[in-house]
Length: 212
Image 1 (cartoon, one colour):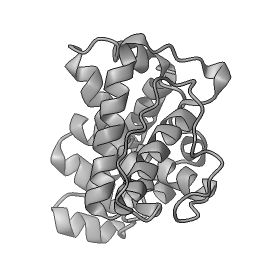
Image 2: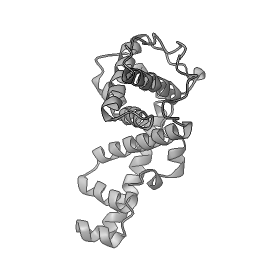
Image 3: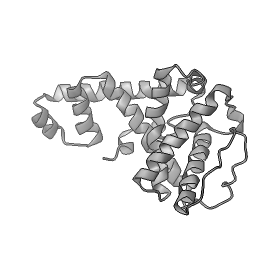
């Protein structure tokens, strides 16, 4: 499914800016809702980048786990400064550290490197990515993951049949006659679902923008 193609261009240009307020809430380990928000929003990005770097499924899952663990350990004393770089760049750097660890493990090395803070120099920064991972590939993974996160939020807010209409007609681009026949609804309900869920999707994006 071409998810990105179904979303307005302005949304995919800069989907998820720096989540400063969310990062602030993560300082509280007992804020389960914020930690769930962070994990559900970003784990697929971390996983997808690891796969594109050349890791297998198990190794990529470990990258996700280790990256989230690192974030949880450092959040209580972490102060995010957007002037030093974007949140996307920060999270990508953490992911690359963990990817590098996995490739070192393949060679039988004992992985003892654990950066102590966001300002510590990245010893892998001047090395080529393990699979010549291009910045454009990271950007593509970022956009894909975060569009899907926004869509999932909309899905959680509406009735299943409404999302089915939106999914088939807008995202999968079925002809409207096929949608109405498959779901047993009339044309008006399909158009209404398209209109309503498009508004909800933009609303979810605005919420994320406000949390920057």
